[in-house]
Length: 100
Image (tube, one colour):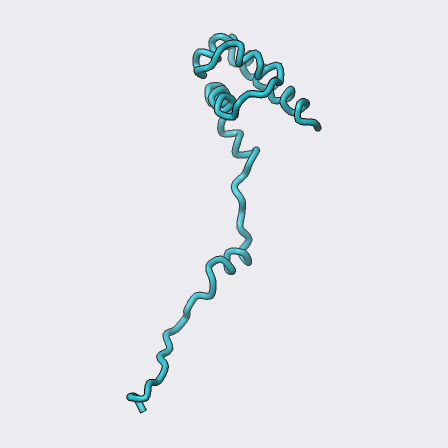
């Protein structure tokens, strides 16, 4: 899927959500702190800044869905072991000449 096609799909889903919530573009814009033209542009699939998109998603209650977009990286147990390094299990003192 091309980038413009993805923007169109995102805009379409935002529009559907807005209508399902019985909000006008002007109401969503006012609550999000953007202009109605910006909301219209998002719904048409035009490019907007990430901050603007986040504010619109937050107002629609969709912000938690970003977790699915970029999930937190999971570390495998083997990678975690390498990161942590070898843990000491005992203390060993080297003998000095005075101890002999």
